[in-house]
Image (cartoon, rainbow, N blue to C red; front, side, top):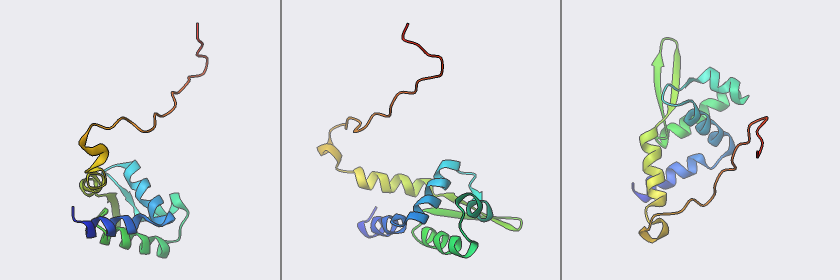
Length: 114
């Protein structure tokens, strides 16, 4: 990935609402969501959402597919992988990286140390 493409993608994500839209689309996976459902879930108006979707689309971070009267949006997972690869290309001097943060272990209700 070229630096200018990475900068465009990162700039598109550098806004709270757009980042929320993108994270939601990553969470729901390749099937995506209709614009109306995105607006409902994130409590944003349609015209505001339209602006954010256009910015993410221009950065090639999301894909749109018409289905009937709706447009469904999904994360562009290959582009996301390219961006992550670009950001970590020289990570740890070429050595395998240890996880920087281990998520806390979940404790289930009723579990004991017996």
